[in-house]
Length: 119
Image (tube, rainbow, N blue to C red; front, top):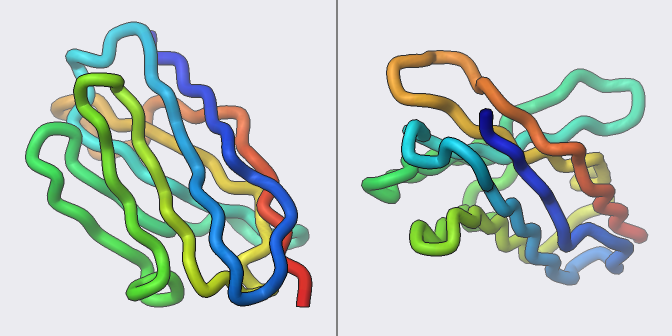
């Protein structure tokens, strides 16, 4: 099993920045990738960004490309999401997820952290 704990959410004004963290523990040696997803009120959960666990290749949703940066500290088993130029439409609960080697689905999810961007 893998446990994920997110932190770093909060309230910020439009144009501001936040940095989310996701600390993984447990069977982290089995992981192949990590991602951030977000869910706004009344909407479905959406993909935001992903990174491979070992190689550092990244992928972003068009809506966050150029503003968000995903990174990981492999030694600390922690994944970060640096969010800049935040917009009110970025308001959502942000979830960290990880994927195990050989799987195409996201196997483990964190509890989520609220990000609120005021206009």
